[in-house]
Image 1 (tube, rainbow, N blue to C red):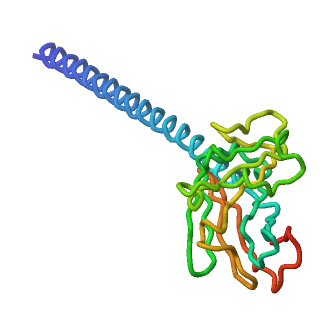
Image 2: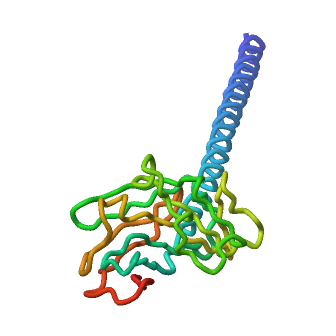
Image 3: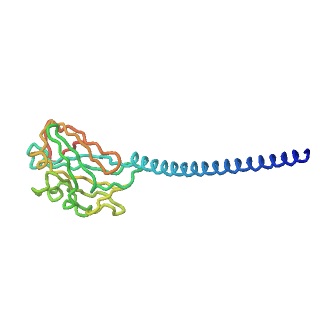
Length: 223
């Protein structure tokens, strides 16, 4: 009788050990699966965070700066008929495609949105010292009121061309607008003008000036 009790006791101990081992193995497997899920999730989050960070840096650094705005008092008529807006890429900016940019400009009573017209692209070699040449500005009745042209002042790497006018570090161009066509007449004296040169990505260049109380010369510095 004593031997039977001893055998049964030993079998119970063996069963308990096997059960504990099964529980342990199951715990290890569950922990491994959980760790795998956590690692995959953390890797995805890290990748997403890096991508978001790069895009954010690009958005913050990329953009256009307006360097100057010049107006042309055609024939000393007392009204600005053409304006040329000097722009460059901001410091640390990624490449900016002016072909995908939009000029928003208003005289307080009318607002216009202008897009790039590749037919009015002028290289540095063709300026001939005068940025206020009629062929540099949109003059066709079909698009003169809704488009702008480009005059290249500096482009060391040749990135800015008629089909793809891309500017980057060191590039300087002027955006040409036929104000007379866009606003049904030129800018008269004491007129508040405001707007933006809006790139595809990044910060816009700001347009903000008031035309002078009198026009005494052909070329007028506006901003």
